[in-house]
Length: 618
Image (tube, rainbow, N blue to C red; front, side, top):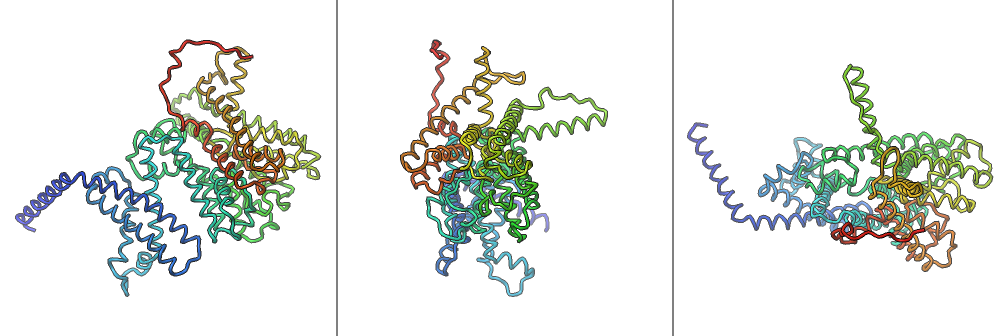
């Protein structure tokens, strides 16, 4: 190319760029309107395509049904293609500054799906394997599904950017997956025998809220596909809907607003926004890693007489590890954890399950703090080996970490000893000493939120039932996978009582004072828990007056504090009581104070300007 031709080409490119700039400037309003329209359609299409893919996988279809479903998927595919092309042409600068590699990959992948429509399938392709992939329905459906997940994640973050109330947003996200799960669990490929919608809604709520209550026998009702759906719902509810979507949005995009990052930081207990993505990665990777390790451990503790088939062993190990760590309490074994084949002399499966339950009930803030302590110790040792000076931090352990660990293990030790003492000649009768000790620890961890049953709770002594319900009420640590009012709340209330009795100005522990705000919040949680419990118990009494009072109290306690244990009354509940307990499970999972605060308008605080006066409290 000579210099004259090169100059002419540069001039034409500059002229084209100028005309493009003039066009986008003159029609900026129209471009923005169309961008909003195609963006909204893409969000709707992402939901429609995911639902269509679920229906495609869950049913046996006739030829006409397949045509309708494929038409829906291809329509969504067309909307995604138009969105990518429009953003590439008119929003290219914005696209460069707001996306990362994975977003570009999904954009390119969705564009690659139109090859089969614009270029006929060649008879003699250059790369046969590539040709088989690009012209396959499986490839198109996979790409459309992946793009839908990314689009849905962005929609969640855009919703957060509008300063939506975090409590209502969290509640809405749980409700969304509960409703989706309730329909998916009814698909013919998910169940051995059909179940009605109220049972499906109850199970989906119990799974997403990681409770474990179920009106049907899970092992006899659900197929491997149904168990997979149940496992996905448990995982979503365990790690948290917003944790997943926040991770996707932050990992895919660098345009997340400051408000988004502050909101997510509070949800995952990240101390700074710089550590937000590493904290999200740590939570997800740690959870999945521990579940995999737990599945391997469970696999090698399964008696051969129980599951001789290797595939059944792997399915049970994966599902049981997930259910145990998430404190969900679902089991895919006949009779669950009470199956006689599990009662081996070594109690290995119960011991592994206990460790997984305990890890899930400790809480992500504690795990993050323990991770930081480990890295600090390693850094200290490394610097000492190199002869460098290292200044040790003043407080390695957060006050929250100390309170949770000390309170949790104290409650576990006391309740295990009491269970061993009271049930020694009752439900533990006929066991060896080691089996009694293992079962005492296991059955003292279950009420914290796990919901399994190795012995029949209906056979417990009245005093044991009272201890179990107190444990249900306390639960596990805040921001953990356990339920209850939380160990942190219980510790704060106890310390506040001590401060009042000793005439201290504020509650304190480990040479650190606890803020008045934390104490007030703990008292509020306690009050709201009592009010909620009374309301739901009264509702069940109205709808199911024939049930035994003991069963009613136990069932409501188990649902509200997301434990999952039952005296056998779940299958006897009316549809009205099931809906009531679904609300209780959602309230217990999201947080009583979180949901309630979402419905109150925050007014300007005038209390500090008002005159103070004491009221009489004996």
